[in-house]
Image (cartoon, rainbow, N blue to C red; front, side, top):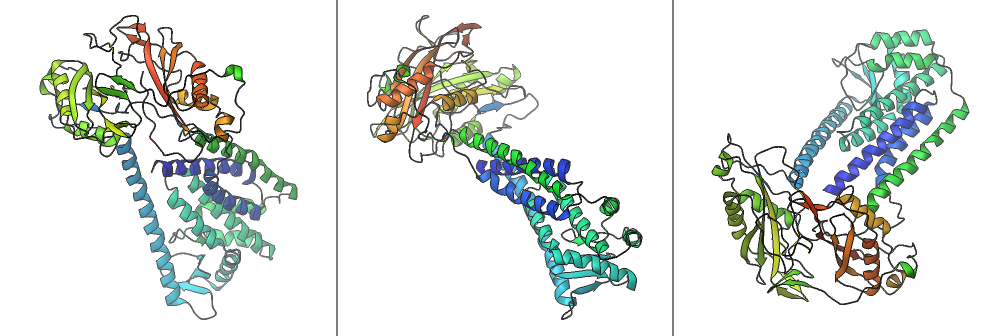
Length: 573
């Protein structure tokens, strides 16, 4: 669904670019055939260009460690019933948007089908063999063309009827009706986009200019032709998917274009102005694809010299373990239905305690628990509390979680530590929640202030304000994607895999104490190590308002084949 909406957005962007070129450089010229061609080409190109990607460097697959559960926000107010809770997740928003979009598509599709059916019914009932003119009664429409026929008002005088038939015949000869049907279909796809309606108006105007120009070229006096237009201007509109002689909104422009000086042939060179816009669109669309971070395929860019490579000791797996449970494993536990299902389950089953609402108690509770080798949830504890009332509710909900798909190490199910942050808020402003922390290492102990380091000199795992890369998580992804080079030797030998690195963001924000927790191959390890070592300074994490060192973890997947698509997850310390 997200990819489809991204495609629609790209189409809308392309239409806007093309319309800017048409409106400012082409619309005032009298080269109507060229303008018609440009509009139709713009519509087709806007549908095709978003599907084209210029691949300079394949995007990087960075799966951030830990589960993205920052969207679990439990709300409540003193006026609302305790059972009322609103969870605004990205999936819910996208579903609502999709329903709205689909409703518009269905409505416009039905409208178009009804109009087409009505026209076909009229043709089947009133057509005369060998005669393409169909006379209508009671429709108050001077003339239009559709399905290879000319429809005119039967009450027209003989002179007016002859002139209008000549005009509509030009539409018929040029097959303008098919243009209108095509743009109506584009409007169904892009009904929310105002630019497509501008193109629709421009295309209909070009049709009328073209028909007017050919009629006047056949010898019809301009004055009498304009008078006929004015006589028909107050006729009401019946069908939108047709070309009509007396379109009131175009009368003034048509009269101006009739008497305007003809554009010269060199004006066709203006079409070349669209080329920079097409190039810009391709760059934009390709950049979007490059930064999508779905995978990292081998780049043709050569790796840096050997002096830039950092030697990393190779081991097939450096798993992190605390006590009898792991912290990092090859396959992390998965809730039935995925992360969104877990978020939804917690949101639907957490009740904002009435006592907390009365006392206006709010905050973020972090609950840690162990997922056993059979998927059961055990050893639930609050490692960062807010208030006993909120802590107890968060612990209750987590304790009642159904079984997970267990984590695996070396293909064997093993117990794994898991962590869930839950935010209780009574304020509408408290919707932005910092990233969740990672599972703590073995030396972690619960402190009264919500910090998690047993030694003040050792980095923290969880702090009140987690470190932040300049520009946020997306900027960190972009930095890594733009600076990692797939080692040539690794590409030649088909070496792929997922490297997990841990580093410390110091109290000054610098990156220090880099280590490889999960290794794949010295070449890939070294490249991942090298890039992480070049990271610019972070905004340091804070505990009690004081900057402190904090652990951070980044897994990076190198893949030469089409990778398994995984959701981008939130970063830990």
